Each structure stands twice: as C-alpha cells, then as structure tokens.
Length: 239
Image 1 (cartoon, rainbow, N blue to C red):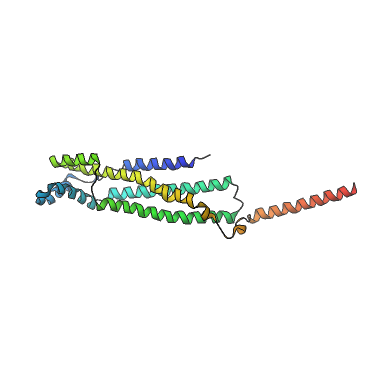
Image 2 (cartoon, helix red, strand yellow):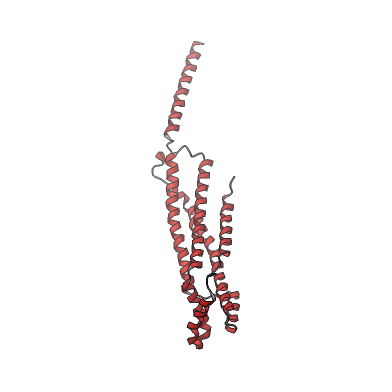
C-alpha cells in the first residue's frame, strides 16, 4: 500500500533541498558592485543606510533568484495536487466505486473545482511573499546582523557580496518554513474539512446508478436466477 503522507513529506523535503541549492545572484559581478558603491558615495553621511540601499538595488535589478524561488514553490504545490488525486483514485478502488460512473464524475469534479480554487490562492500567497520581501529589506536574523556589522568595518566587494548572499539565505529559510504550511492548509486541511459538503448532492439516487454495462449484466443475472428458481419449483412439484 502507498503511504501518501510519506509521499507528501518527501515532496516537501525535495522542495527544501531545491531551495537550498539556488545559486543566489551568481551573475552579479564585481563591476556591478563597484557601480552600486559609486552611486552611493555621495551619501557618505548616511553610510549605514547606503548598504541597505545597495542591497535594495541588487534585488530591484535582479529578480532571477526570487523568480526561481517562486517557481519552485508553485511547482511544489502542483506536485501535492497530483498526489491528492492519486489518493482519491486509490480510495475509489479501495471502496469498489468503479462501477458508478456518475458518482465518480461527481466526486472528481467537485474536488477538482475546490482544489483548483485553492491552487489560485496558493499562487497569490506565493506572489505576495515575494512582494513582501521586495518591499522591505531587513531582518533581525543574527547571521545577517553580524555580516552587516562586518560591512560597516570593511566595504570590500567580497564582504558586500556576502551580505546579500546572507540576506537571501534568510529569504530562503522563510520560504522553506512557510510554503509547506501554506500547501498543507490550502490543499490538505481545506479538503479534509470540506469533504462531506463537497460530496453532498441532491441527486443521490442518480449518482448511485451503476454503469450501463454492469447494470445490464446484473439484470441478466437476476432474470437467470428467476428462471432457475422457477425450474426448481417445477421440479419440486413433479417429485
């Protein structure tokens, strides 16, 4: 038997590994950093803010890493979506419902409509997370604060590059923590909590009608049974 909770957990593990492997802003050159430093030299009075402005300019000018983070998050939700329909198919087989086409169509259509709507919400949430990160570049994460203090004492290109790499790592950690929770809430928990209402129908009799082929075979067997019972009755009368 397939353990679907383990399959979903494996998807989340893979997602976190893929996020870890993102090469943040690897195409940013020393020349790019030089330009950013020169543009901020005129504001030496506010040197502490200048490094944050440099960080903001790096993020504004290079969305590749954030877009990759977004795409990995959306793909993770899609993988869980597929697993849920595999689970539904397994439940249908386990409960011997394959003879009821109307019921199967009803179950899958209602669940698909619900989950498709939830996928749109996940997409919106992920886009908002990216926007939040772009809107305010700061964190109290200790590793970033330590690196920020280093930058104040050493403005070399490598230190500045380390600063934004350290900051992007805090963004990756945020996504690694939040995205699995979003998916669990919007897909798994919502489906669990709404399953009964999703499956309700005013046409329950129609839904429980068997496939035409199966219904015909059942009717034929029923008629054959009646014939056999009549023959048995006739024989008993003779004897």
